[in-house]
View (cartoon, rainbow, N blue to C red):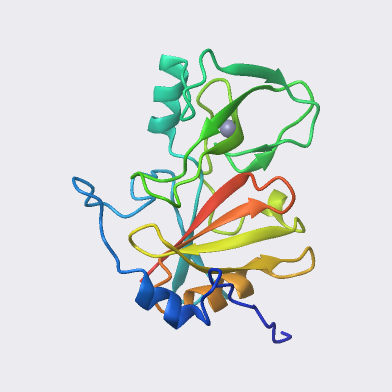
Length: 207
Ligand SMILES: [Zn+2]
């Protein structure tokens, strides 16, 4: 397997990631003892080549989506929710697959963090109108999302960005994920679309 140079991007004005980490002390917001993503429920464990578990691929948590559907208000305060009929090809984040033409979806603003913070972005995602089967079989990076360029952003336990890299269409996601988790302090990775920046899924480290 070819070696891949996965450039770790640090913040503006910082010389490198180690410096970046020193200048961003880890602080958990008051009343928030859980790391980002800890509420995510639809999880399974991934193994590579039959070895030890390495990461979990996380769809959006069903309970949070149920709350948004029931209240009719999304994480951006939009009410009512916007319904759309899929043209086909929309990435659906409740089950991590591509929509078929004609499927009924909601286009909602979603914040993939449990706690507020400067890096806790809110952005648009497609989900199914009703609770679906989720991502039960996800022992792998989502097959239907392979070959799709992504930005992989790394976060520490407090939700601070601690690097990231660009996944090209021909890259093996598992290789890139392993490289990123080999960096100190990386607890989870959010994958986002390259042009629009829309959140796709979370990859959590299995310690
Ligand atoms: Zn779904």
